[in-house]
Figure 1 (spheres, one colour):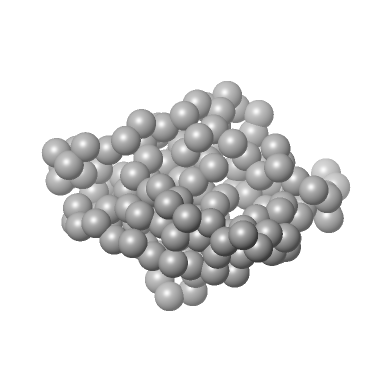
Figure 2: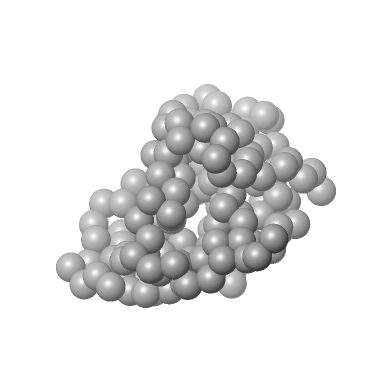
Length: 158
C-alpha cells in the first residue's frame, strides 16, 4: 500500500482546477499507480471517496466506494441532475478534518466517465452515492464542501 498524504485545507492546492486525463495518460503506468495510490490513501483514511487534488495531483480522477468496492472514474461529468434537491447527508472531508455539515445536493445524478481501462461508462446514482459523486467532482473544480455547507453539525475540538 502506498499512502500519499492527504492535502489539508487551507492548502491552496485544493482550490486549483484539475485537467482532463488523455487516453495516452490513462494507459500509462504513472496514471494506473495514481489510481492505486488514491484507493490506498482513501482506505487508510477510512474515506468513501477521494479526488486526485486531495493528494496533490490536478488530474480529473476520483475514487468512489459506496460499499460495493472502490472504483476509479476518470474525467467524470455530471450530465443530468434530478430536480429534487435537499438530499441531506452529513458530509465531512478527508481534506477538512474535524468539520461536518449538511449540504444541499441533488437526490440523483447521471455521470459519464471513463473507467481505469479507458472504457466509457454512464451511471445513474442516487442518495449517498449521488452525494459522493457530487462532492468528489466539486474537488476537481477546486470547490470544498465547506463552500456549500447549509448548516455545520459538528466541529472537533482541539
